[in-house]
Length: 205
Image (cartoon, rainbow, N blue to C red):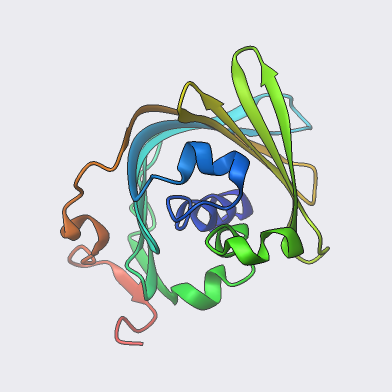
């Protein structure tokens, strides 16, 4: 899994949990589930042209999500609370890893625990810019694998997420058709490998 995608899925797994700070509580404190479509742009410094992908995501508090890339290639990530399933259609391969261990050093874990927010992050409200209300999250440690995250809200909804890794690469996600607290079937957060694909990892562990 690429660095930008690992950061994305780790952020989204607990994004819809309880409030992380008073300023963000106004936007996320009431959210228990979320679904949305997104456009993702990974900016390449050498060419200046972003790699663009499309997909949709479902999140259920506190630790379940389904992230699907539809175009230009199909990839699926499903967190069921215990395992993270990664499916690459082109490679015909499914990888299974322990969810907790994989996400242990991610910002999503801290976002689920308000008591530790100030210990792990510097959180700053950056105010309005072009009608987007921005928040800046900077990790206090140097081993997180990323430099900072920005969340932008339009109206009452999450509109854009910007992720900056420690190598200077920027990943931007624009959300649309976002729904908060709609009922999401439990089957959304389960995954059965397609017939005939290679499976790496033990689904029982």
